[in-house]
Image 1 (cartoon, helix red, strand yellow):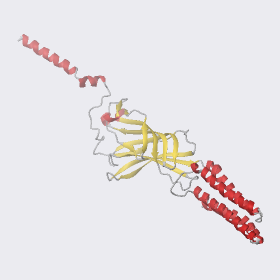
Image 2 (image 1 turned 135 degrees about the horizontal axis):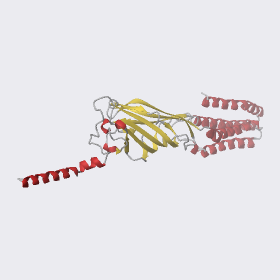
Image 3 (image 1 turned 135 degrees about the vertical axis):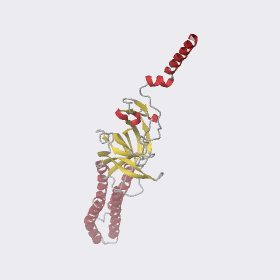
Image 4 (image 1 turned 90 degrees about the horizontal axis):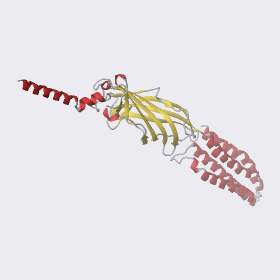
Length: 344
């Protein structure tokens, strides 16, 4: 009897030691940030009101805007916040992103982005979750360049949850996390405003309405560069073509030579400035101005040929009257071109 009691006591003590040294129990004691098993594909409060996700994008830097490919290159910090009661009690813990439920928020804009932060979330009191990720690379945006180079653009960067509709995940603007850094490494543009907002959007693939966050970046192009590098020299070439109206048509050699030089100078100038303007499938106001100026210079060449021909036919008086009339007609035509193109 005494021998059986001792054996039973020994077995109970062995079972106690083994249970205390079990991996699950020891992990719970040693890792206060261990996450209890959960369904990561099921949002908190499933079946109830939509999960509120606070979104903010801070533009850390903007390094380039490509007008032809319609992309912008920059560095963006994305802040996401939501509450998951299942993580309550894990205050101050950093948890891998794939170990918990996430709203699956992605960029709508196509492009190539790289991340620089660990894919982990910070947990606060009551299961408050905060996820910070930094993205850098290029994003596609829409540019309407018909007013180039006097255009003002609003670039829109959008985030949406492709996995959950608006009845499951609803986005809101984190005003504190939305904004920009004061100094940006872009010289051709002046950023005037950065604002966040939300809207509804139909996701065609699932035929559901989703909540969308938009970061709207308002910017003005630095137009003085194009004024001094393209528009002013172009005007001077046009003015040079008018000097033939003060040359006696009897001296048709210098007159025609000056007109031809003006035309060739204009053509060479257009080739030299090709890299400064975007190649598009439609006309911008700069294209309209350049084309109109080319036509005026060509008409000045035609006028000089006409007056030279009249002189050769001994009709010098008519040729002189044409020159005097052209001194007013051509500047007025150029003024009309400027008003129609830039002030319509």
